[in-house]
Image 1 (spheres, rainbow, N blue to C red):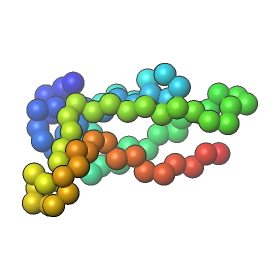
Image 2 (spheres, rainbow, N blue to C red):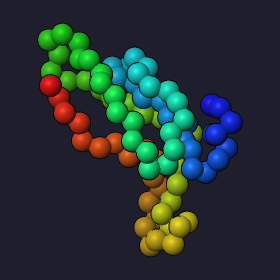
Image 3 (tube, one colour):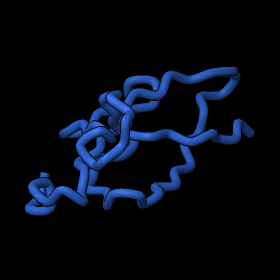
Image 4 (cartoon, one colour):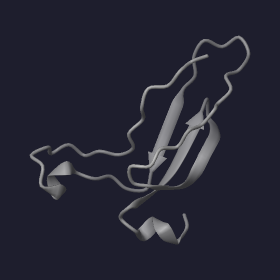
Length: 79
């Protein structure tokens, strides 16, 4: 992780597809990362894993939501 890791608005993110590291870097909170991850020929699925350097609770920011949250992953298109 670089010097941004200590800033609350940055997360250090790692993403794997089928156990292969496909992204590692600092991501600013609420920023999007768009990746084109080729599927193995003939495969109909893949396993996506993620890791972040810290979690957060909406309750800490004035919400009644007490969940502990990490990285948000949106829908993707399988082509």
